[in-house]
Image (cartoon, rainbow, N blue to C red; front, side, top):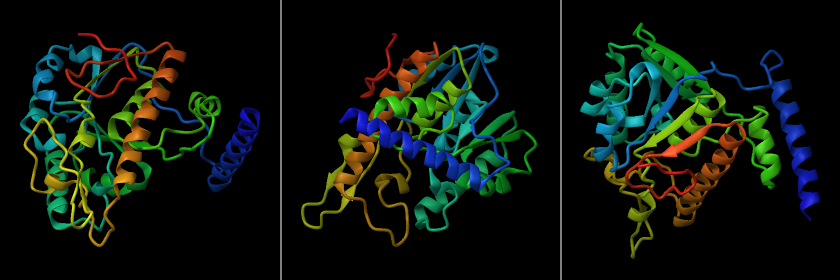
Length: 288
């Protein structure tokens, strides 16, 4: 059975690769970014543990590390104090035209904060939102832009899934901002990756209304939640609420891709260390 799965995976792999190439003949097949062999990647999530860990992050030497922040981090005081030199706008809400009022206001606040950044910073964005984000921030000469390809593939065998990533023909699916930044850092060949604020405890706050079956997700962060973030399941207008199964499957995918990325990093001789003082992610070694 395993051999049959490998054959089907190989056929799917080749077929999708050919489709990608024929869609854009001028684009190189392999994914490539600037190599950062002698630097450390500091990936900063927004989990509650960051309140305790931000002081440790401040001790890293700026010339030896690159600092990656994500999503609504720019709306905090910590953003201007830390001055990260990379920023990942991972969620499609940053370029969607279907946001509800509260999330639209929250997005605009983030974009406006980034517009006035007075230090050099690179904005990473998935290719589906790249042009929109670039058009909003282009006037700030301190900002440069990096397009994150959306060329993922789902294969049934770990061996073929690893080959898809190792060969750089395919990217990791953007299931979570920290997951994508780990993949990006591996492809850039950073010597070490340190992860903070990756509590991944949101699944604990999932609530199912016992009368309506409405699934709400009041995810906690290191900062006080905005009105919009009091229920992060309600981002879009006229869009059906995700089921509990959908939510838990999303959590499962994050955990499984973390496992895969840890194996990928080991194969490439890169250390990934989860230094979040609290985290449900068990894929990476810890040092404290």
